[in-house]
Length: 266
Image (cartoon, rainbow, N blue to C red; front, side):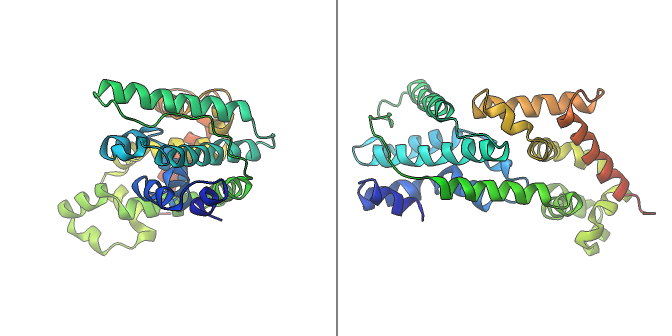
């Protein structure tokens, strides 16, 4: 089951649904589905992805397209909120789904007006009577995979493919011959490990918030964008102070593990 099939089942025009799906690159659900660990990086800009596309494709506000756009937002919100509630062992909070959807449309309206855009998608009185459980289960499984992934493997991948390391290779050509498994040690030998940790600190914070379910508890109380900002802000503060909760403890554990594994004697 995918978005196009759902759109047809709820009575939307296939061609218009395809247009919306392609212009929005499948929405946040698809960004999460194909994201590498930590997958929460895929929604770090929530809900900015929508406004960027609205500014570029005014057709999204037209009849038929507007409803298909609303379905995509519904799917995205349910995927994020639904997976969080499942991971916490709680029922799906429909009031939270509703309030998050309202927040997104308010955000779209305010950003459109501030950019002198008069035509933008608006919420309509549509009841999408459909079971979105398969989409929620997809993202729940992705989150579980993140929690089970080896931390060193995650950050070795990030380091090996990063612009930070590419730049370091230009200064230290010998790093070009280093394998992925030894890339963190190479950063340490180059006295660049601390700078790299600062460079990827948001990845650390988001992964820690996933593994401790701090993200999930937050979004069931606040909206998604403010929860992500809170996670990033608290993460930055925790580096220079004693940890105050499980989330901040996890940040320290990840950083310690990265530094310990980067010792060339280990």
